[in-house]
Length: 218
Image (cartoon, rainbow, N blue to C red; front, top):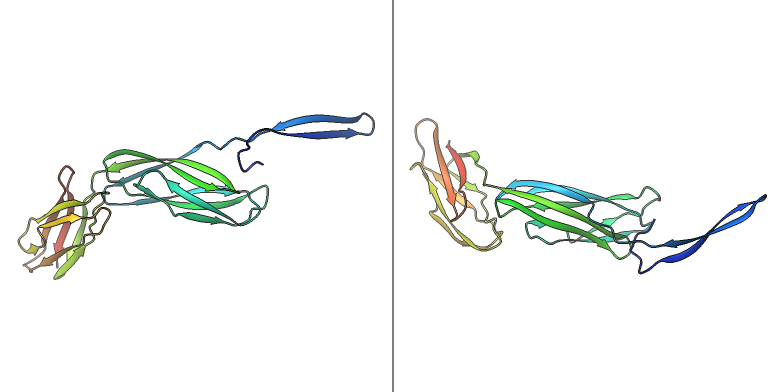
């Protein structure tokens, strides 16, 4: 079983022997090529939310092996490397790579995952992602105060406006120049009221659908 692509053909002989008929010698020319991207993974997640799936492959090297992992799209992230235990031929040892999809666009976004080792071989997987509009979240129960775990999902710095539709709740009016892929917690205060008090908090970034967070005073 070849693990690495060869520079050219390797010539070897195989012999079949029979006491009655003698030896039959055949010349074999062996050459291995790089493995293609014969697998794919499908992702679907809303902007601001991440989805993690597992890419699995078999290590056939009968020794400890480290594989480097990389991806050509910043919306997909993988660990820098994974370790593989020695394989027991011919089954091989299963190795897992966690792939996280964190979209910053609405629509299709694709990438290529490369898992490589100088001794164990190379593996390729096509990653097909689909970004969705921000998904409404909540209701969050606010007892005096509550912090919404918001982040800028985009790769560049962005500014956001924040509004709440009930005067019983108060929060910041804006989140200016939040660095890309950074957390920007939103603190919400509740002044109290009679009965069940509800509200909708909206976060807006120009050119994108809003983020909606439903609140319930307690």
